[in-house]
Picture 1 (cartoon, rainbow, N blue to C red):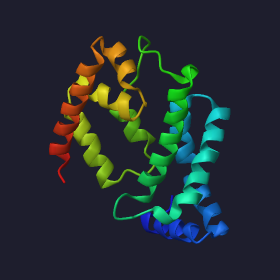
Picture 2: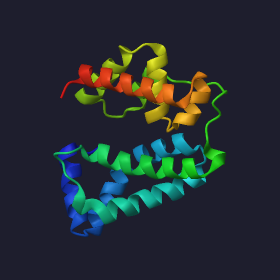
Picture 3: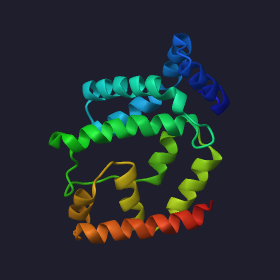
Length: 179
């Protein structure tokens, strides 16, 4: 895995339409982004298509990347994740079954991270401080891509109550994470 500095350099080169830099950026980040998209969509052929769309967006918007606002991986993950979630929300076959079993584990997140940064350790520590219901709510919403209606069904609460609970949990996390 390339360092954040190397990824920043590659994205800057991509912004100048350097195809070789784009190929290198793709090779260095493809597996991680594919894993995220596949986890959301669950179908390899669909995940591949969404990944191509995500990289096209990365190519088109590389000039807008600001390393002061996010790390390169955070920026690219957000693009890929948003593409996958958009498709999942538009297509009922990808909607999670709120009554089915759900595996939400901090260990799985920790093991899935190929590069555990101090920021990730801090986030995992913050998530570990939440009670099980809060942690599950946050992870299903932000890692699993569940919408409020799906969360409401899962937790047998009105959507507005889920929204407020999620808001309170995020405020609690923000206080723990700091500025």
